Image (tube, rainbow, N blue to C red; front, top):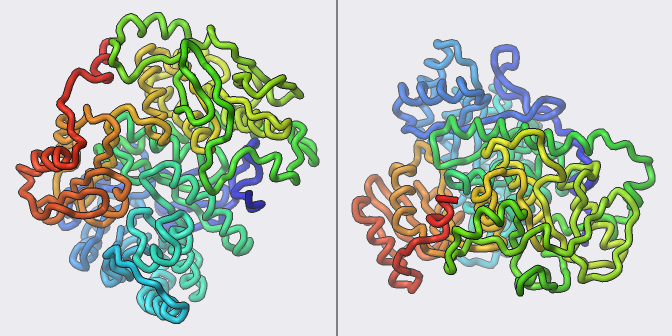
Length: 614
């Protein structure tokens, strides 16, 4: 395991200290990202950028609910020029919220947009490159020539932003890495980091530092690894490379699934002290994203406050020497590996640990309510009752011994640490003892005085259990913060699916809408789900345009992508196989494509339907 770290400790919260990036005039409604300033909430409007009135209306709607930065797409120079009118109208109405222009393929659009907005977002994967999934072996000389070409393309924007006092977001997306990066570094977190650093070096070469980074993916595990690796690399580059970080899980989707994925990715990193601004990307009306941002920030604060107050001596952390990295660090932060454990019997022939899937445990009260209503074919079912298990409850802040590796262990309720830190500490101490016991994860280590609001219970459980699963820790899970029996069971399975640990239903990757979107994402997503939500284990991507489409959905089985107004392209993996299908028949054609590839099954009453009455 590398000795490079992305945070001070996996057990104790300390916010990463980043340099300040100024977006607009703070004295007139602008914001400062980084430093000691609170995490900034932002979102993106969804309409055509040439529709000035609608852009203004949607921007004002976002500001009313607390959005602090509004992003607007500018796919062409004409769109970028209309930002002048949008910003002027907003300012005339007394709205000083900073505006970010979202740029992808056209450097000339970025230069135009920088004249009118406070920040320009560029995506290194397609700002100066095209993506054709071409395979080419670059020599060092050829690669250097490509970097020189990129510098020539990006430098004019850097100089203009410096002159006008603008900020820049260097925003890498997992789905839009350039062919050059893909061929040199692969489709990997490392490739995303290198792509962003190339642009950062150009900015610094010109004395420009008013920029931030983002590393977005639709896969929470990959997203977490990317941001950790980015921060570690910035630390290696030097103390003045402490640029702010923008967090987000792109194409998270809608409803519970979108919120769970976002809570896993964003929540995990916030708990480790990373992140200066966030955006929750949902396939819903944009103002709903801000509510989730606010709730998530509130929950992360409650999950880290206890760790912030723990007093430690300088030489050890509950008996773990900080210098003994290989022992004290309970997981590899940059490469997902599930913690190795022996396989044991959990209950009633259900086994966990080893190569078994992560199991779902419920309380006796939940079992009594849901078990009588489940059918034999239900995919969502309790697999063990907590009170019936032979589980050893441990306070990892104290010394303990475990007699054998086949003993199931968990953190004892009332342990004076937040749940994420407590379970990491348990895994670390087991490692120090040479033990590999399977671990049962809990979303909370005690009960609230009153039942949590379901939306809060969802975010808290996802942030706690999801982040631990992303660390590779956990062989079974127990959700108790959600007081509804059926809701808690469904939430447990949804967290496992979002974390990539289990597949019990159709998985969807769906982007939030924006001005580039070529169809109504919410309506189409609903239609596709109505036809396909019974397809267990099938992953379908629904993408509004081609900016991130082919790349971000590369691990999807099938893709539905806007190719032109009223026209849809259908994909198998990242390969387009059907082109320019009229939108009115595209969903039927998608179903036909699924049939052709042997992934179709006729719908029957599924587990979600059975749980609806629980």
